[in-house]
Length: 171
Image 1 (cartoon, rainbow, N blue to C red):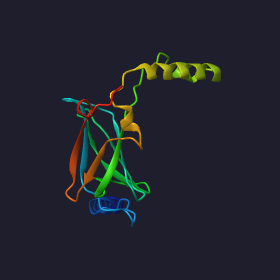
Image 2 (spheres, helix red, strand yellow):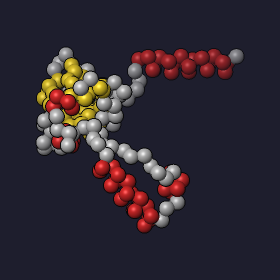
Image 3 (cartoon, helix red, strand yellow):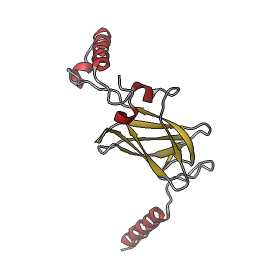
Image 4 (tube, helix red, strand yellow):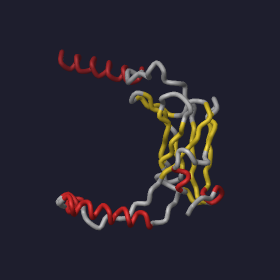
């Protein structure tokens, strides 16, 4: 009976801890963030699996997200392994990346048994196939110095839509 009482006391303490938020604490220099979404489309078609990176002019917070099947990325901010939803208020340049990925013609097991020379040849062939594939995202959107994409995050949060068909740039 005593063991059962002890168990319930510990279980109650654990539930209270979770409810109160005994999880990791935000670093002291973590800025306030605001909900923000980026939608990436080609006309009316969403583009999934796009990595979206916000480029801040100052600070050391990593701000990014990845689009889902609807082409929407919910942006998060990370500082010292602590992540919270949203982005700090400010103006940002943005890069979007999605490299084409050809199907592998060898299994993981077969690739794991290759010699270094065979592996290098396989990788070179894979990269050549990848280079020939059409891109869903313009290369310029991936270039930190040349990206035409930008957004302003305000205290109320928000959303921006980047449309490949409208902004162009596909080679």
